Image (tube, rainbow over all chains, first blue to last red; front, side, top):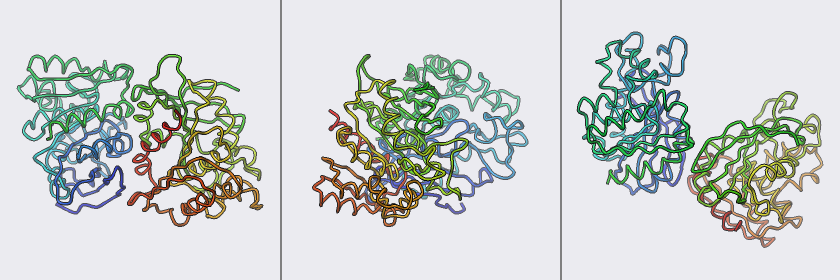
Length: 281
Length: 281
């Protein structure tokens, strides 16, 4: 592994909000991520919550607007927020510069299709390379991990959580894409990154993973009822139906009046972190 | 008064974070401000906390990064965040485009000097025009107001609070400019807006106002010890000494490791809002 460079560090809620940059072997680019370390005893190791962000976001959106530090400080949780795609010279973007594919929209898959395959390897980055870095450089107890995300990042949290049931003790999401194979955002992204064979999409589709046998003890999902993407892109009833059939204990909370923004996320962040902390021990 | 146009409204913590725009008579420009309305009973009126922002900020910085909504919702407080200067075509800026004068740096004074006098009337805007709008359009109890601010906005909160002891039941600040007449930021701004006669600066200088007899029952100030502007621009010991001489009950908390950013502000926002709520009844 190459070096890890500090970008910024700010004291907050008794701990430190850091931003770090490193040359990623997975993506072949520099990658930036945020880590909040709460106050803790010297030598202690802490559970770690992964937060995966949505379309157009970097590591910075949740860091600035997510309002997670108070609860992380109180509960003793480290929170890691990766970027949502590779970036930089030579990284292919959506041919039309659309917000929902390419830069800022890696969808947490390893692309197999040209011209995306060389850099768009967010699955490997988030599930292998970055955990190694976090485990090596921060005071984490890697035996106590959980994962959450928003929108595209909710898709990431669900699909990564479902495929790593022994790694993550809790999985939750804000307004997640639950069935990318069945909605326009997901069809564009999975088609573009993985190609037209929809069989290859199933391991990156939470509803399909559950249909194919993946299981988790419990899921927490909050969804705003005034979310402009609810009916076309998010469709939480598909997750409801899959969990019911599979016997997965899904707590799906429809929140009246809330939209897709960080005003929604920040409102319920505390609930999610407490739900994670209760399962992280 | 001309119309008030909604810019955005997002449900958050059970209330609504709104942004509004209007044609200001005071500044002769359009002005934008943010108002958070917490959940409340129909027909109720609520106390209002004014938050004045620092250099380079708009209404949006504290709205996105200030983490005030949880406490405002719990305590039943409305929070109003104005912009920091007039903006738009024909509004003079710093001749060199510096960040500490002109756009984003109105210093909460009514300019008397060319070319700033026509639009830079933030004192009148924040103390007269905007309160009228807030009183007319939002469910506020204008008998229960308090004021806080950060850096340049801390200067604004202190100077406005000291000159309106019957209006504001609580005054507090994060890393305020306490003696603009004695520090480079303030000397540049007060000189540029009010001219070279330093006698005219005293009514916009918290320490000078206290020396000249202004009084408040109590002040709460938090100041990060790792704030890069502490020694040259902020100098809270000048406020400490003035309050001691005047018998003003100043709680000045020096916070080890904290800088000048919203990571610092958001950490202590809750304490300030609780301190205000206790005095707003």
